[in-house]
Each structure stands twice: as structure tokens, then as C-alpha cells.
Length: 415
Image (tube, rainbow, N blue to C red; front, side, top):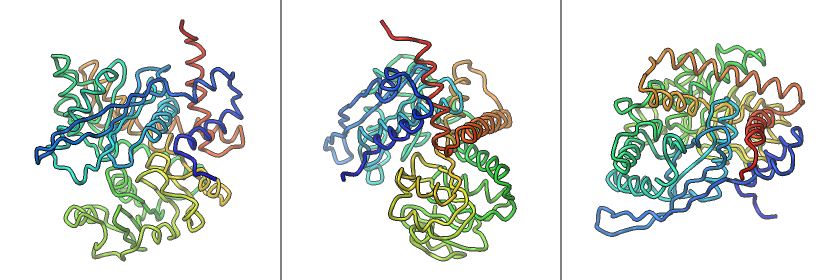
């Protein structure tokens, strides 16, 4: 039996939600189909003078509820299928937390780790020009994702502004504060995840003090989540990056680990820990596991070894459908990414609003608004889960799809 594509996995989750929603066939078919898919050729002059051509994508999955919103990733495995799947997830995610955006995603198939900063800048500017027919503050607002950061967003914003002839800060989010970025954006995804976990702990009557945590992925999301949990009094006993993992049953000093990784380019070798493989860390018993790398990290090959009470998805779809069913059967409380990692798009929404009105909030206001939205979203999804007797992923998809379907039905068919 051929392996499912990522988009097929997303459609399977949509089908599970529709068993409870029973949407009209035309609406259901509409929600299974992306509205626009753009494939672009991105020629880039490399540092050696040669011109290389990269393939780029931007998919607007649905914008019934507002402008499309979604990140840009640079990665060798970027494909139209992956970008379409992620755009669909963004559509549900924005609706789950009830912000007025549709879903989109973009990316370029390249290896940014082997490219110079100038090459990435030239790639970014040309890619922005090519997708400029779709993006804009009223139509589609990109943001950072895998291997893109606030500097990449600054180049995108500048390129689009040059195309328009005036400064357009609202065209992207996740950019530097000095050109219209929002305070609190860098840690927003992690802060939102921590809020949903704290709500889950209350629901499950699990104390925060002494909570043992493992984090798979030590980029921006993984590091910030680990640090916030550490600062709250939880015990982060293991972290992993693309090169390996470390473990200390007494807990890790997350800031010290971050300093070590900055110097060594890996968490491995940190002196107050034991080196492990990522698979070995996955097998360690803990109260909370946070997969915060790429999709498919938890799959049929390793799910049987997982011994955790809560799994909170910091990445987008790090758990395959087969592994998800296995975790639920084991009694693991799974917080799906469309809920757990939605803090990033919530604060991106705040950034966009601030850019449009040219009026900016302080960080405490942003944190308070984020917490309010994430707590409300968790309680709404939990209520659906209890009412329907379904898992949290299906409940979150029900919440998101129902809102999108309502908007589609109210707007009607044009012409």
C-alpha cells in the first residue's frame, strides 16, 4: 500500500471532523480543494556567479474568513503537496482561535544551510517578486517558518514596498520591531503552547511543579517552550535537535544549553547531560513531550516507545495519523498543532492590526490578549471533545472547519 501524502493525511482529519459536521456535499468538496496554487521559478545569482533555478510555491487554501495568512519555509523537501497541506492546516488553525484570516503557506525548495546570507537575500527578493501577484496586506500576509526569520521578512517587506513605491509594513508579520514588528512575536508560538498545556494540566489534575518535559527540536519554538517551562518550575529533562539529543533526569539549564548550542552548533556535548540519539530520547518516560521540529517526527516506527501523559505539538503535524491513533489508544492526551501552536499566528494577527492602524501595544498587553485567546480556544475545543466523545485533534478540526464552512455558506457562490 503506497504511503499517504501529507495533504492526504490532512484530508483524512477533515473527513473525521465531517463525520460529526455532516456538511453539504458542495461545501465539503470546497473545503477539500485549495483556492489558488502558484508555482514559480526563482532564478538566483550565486556567489560564484552561476545562476541557479529554484522552485517556489504559494498556496492560498481558503480566504472566506479574511485575508490569507501563512508562513514561508526554505527547505530541500518543500513540495506543492507539503505547502498545500500546511495551507489547509493554517485555515483551520486561524479559525480555531477565531481570528479573521484564511489559510496560506509558501516555500522554496532549497538548502539554506549550504547558502550564504547574500544568496538567501537574493533568493528571498526574487521569490517575493514572483509571488507579489498574490501577497499584500489586504490579500495574503506571509510570516516566518522553517529556516526563515525576521531578517527574511524584512527583505520581503522591503521588496514588496519597492514594487509598490511606498512602505507597506503590513504585507508580512514576524519582522523586526524597528520596521513594524510586534513585541512578543518571537516567543508567541511557544507562549501559546505553554498556555494550552497549563489548561490541559488543570483539566487532567496534573501539578506543574516537577512536571517532566522533553522537547524534540531546539529551534525558536522548542527553545522558547523549554525555557518558559523551565522558568515556571517544570523539569526539562531532555532536548533534541537535528544532530542528536541530550538527557539529564535532574533537569537541564535551558539557557546554558542554548549557549552551548550556539557555540557547538548542536545540543550534544553539553557537559551536564548524557548524549542520546533522538530515538532514545523519544523512549524516555516523561509527563509532557513537545515535538517542535518537522512533520512526521512521531510515526509508526517510534510511537510504541513513547511514554508520556501529554503530547503538545509545537510543530505542524509532527504526528502521523497512524501514530496519532496509537497515542490515543495508549491514553495520551494529544494537543494538536492547530490549537497548541496557534500562538504564533495570533500574535501575527496582532502585528498586522498594529501595522494597519500604526498604533502599537506594549508586551504585557500582547501577552494578556494572547493568553485570553488561547485559553478560550482550548476550552472551546475541550467542550467539543466532551460533547462529541472524540479526541482533541478531531475536536479542534471540528471547531475550525465549522467556522470556515459557516463563512463559505453565508458568503454564497459567485456569480
